[in-house]
Image (cartoon, rainbow, N blue to C red; front, side):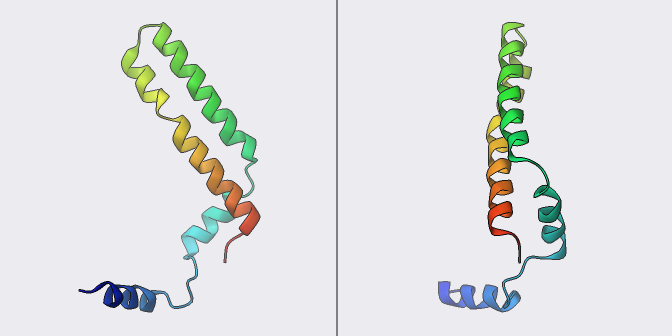
Length: 87
C-alpha cells in the first residue's frame, strides 16, 4: 500500500478530526489539575529514588527513578490541554 493510499484511508476514518468521547472526558478532568502537581511528582520520585539508592535497594531505586519522565510528559500534556483545549 502506498503512503498516499494509507493517508486517504486514515483521513476517511475521522474526517472531522475530532477527539473521541473518552479523550475529551480525560482532557476535561486533567485540565483541572495544577501543572505544579506533575513537577512536584517528578521531583518527589527523584528524591525517593535517591533515598532508595542510599538504602541499597537498587532495583526499587531504578524502578522509581524511571517515573520523572512520564510525570513531566503528563505535565506537558496537561499544559497543552489547558492552553489549546480540546475539540
